[in-house]
Length: 272
Image 1 (cartoon, helix red, strand yellow):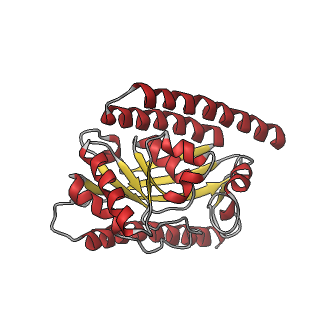
Image 2 (cartoon, helix red, strand yellow):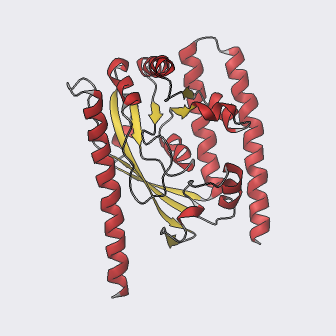
């Protein structure tokens, strides 16, 4: 039965990919205005990734989503990073443009998907290129669109939120948009609490390849993830880039580890 379900999910994903890429390519060719093009990219991606979450069996619980649901402002969205599913989760709630590491540009499938979802590739290790990439992010924010960054720079194993790299957060200051920290927590997989024994099924870390992990993910029955909107940070508040980064880190880390501790305590109390 699980083999049949996994096969159906693979077929559904292939259908989404082979319809998403041509549609976005047409937008790229036919729409000349850059803002409109990126706007369409973000909306199309939001619809497709929301559908992809349903295919995988991901249920998203939203907490304090008044800014994410509101459409009167745009934000530089800052999040902790555990899996490529994080992108799906955020896009399903708030249409955005994803800031990705430049290495993904060369990936046969992921590179094309990121490109045609309006994603921005950044080279963090080259200062000259990084400044140019930051200007691209500022332009997106100045257009009134949302941009998403994962300042940890990579995914983690979920034990804690890793320290933030502050460079890209500086884009908010010149982009006229506030910083909106959000916290992602995966709560359950196949109906069981996420722990050290099953987290590898969802979290993307270590030496496992993307396709190896992805096909393993398709074999899961269900995933429950919580997305919490935290206190927004005004880019014009007088705080430096590093201070904004540190404040966002503290908000996200406290929300993440606080909930982690409460779940552990809850499991202990149930055992007692």
